[in-house]
Image (cartoon, rainbow, N blue to C red; front, side):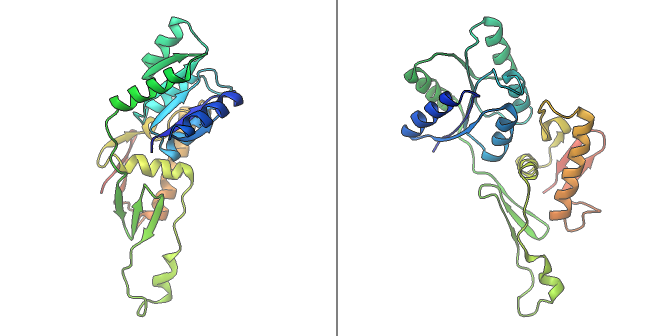
Amino acid sequence: MTRILIVDDELQILRALRITLHARGYDVITASTGRQALAAAATEQPNIILLDLGLPDIDGTDVIHALRDWTAIPIIVLSGRAGSNDKVGALDAGADDYVTKPFRVDELLARLRAVARRTPATTDPPTATIGDYTIDLAARRIIRNPAIPADTASPSDTAGSAPVRLTPTEWHLLDVLLRNPEKLLTYRQLLPRTGGPSPKEQSHYLREYMGRLRRKLEPNPAHPRHFITEPGMGYRYQP
C-alpha cells in the first residue's frame, strides 16, 4: 500500500485529504508543521509527500531542502502561492510537482499516479547484524542473537537480553546509516536542518546521538567497529 504524508496547517484540508485518499486505498499520515513533517518522514518512511509551503514554523521550501539532504522521497507541493517565483523556488529545491490551491481531487490523484510511475520501486529496508544484535528496519525491531545456551548461561551472560529501545532520532540515524553502507555521510545528511539549533549545536547533538547508538549496539563502544567517525566530516557505517 502506498503511504502518503500530508503536510498542511489547515486542519480542514488535512481531514478532507486524509478521508479522500484513504477511501482510494492509500495509507495516510499527517503533519501540521515543518518539524512534524521532518520527523514523520524519518520515522514513518512515506512513499510520497504532499507539502504545503505556508507552514507556521518552517517555510515549505526549507522543508524540501532539509528532506533532500537525506532522502529522494517524491514531493508534491500543494500551495495557494500561484506566483512563478514560488513554483520555481520549490522545484529548484527538489519538489517533483506543484499543484496550486484550490485543486480538483481527480487532478491530484492523477499527479499522485504519475509521480508513483516515475518513482523506482523501493527495496525492502535492510537488516543488519551489529555485535550481538540483528536490526530489522522494516519492523523497527532490534533482536539479540542467541550466543550461549540458556541452561549454561551465567547471570552476567543474560543481563543484556532486555530489548534495545531507540528514540525516533536514533532510529532515523540508524536507518540512514544502514541504507548507505561504507558511504561517508556528512553531518548535514545525518541530521537534516530543522530551522532550530545552529549547525555547531546540531553537530554536538549528533555526537551525542551517535554515542548513544554505540553504547546500545557496539560490542565495545570505546572502540567502535561499525559506526566509524570521520573527523571533521561525518560518520560511516561499516558492516
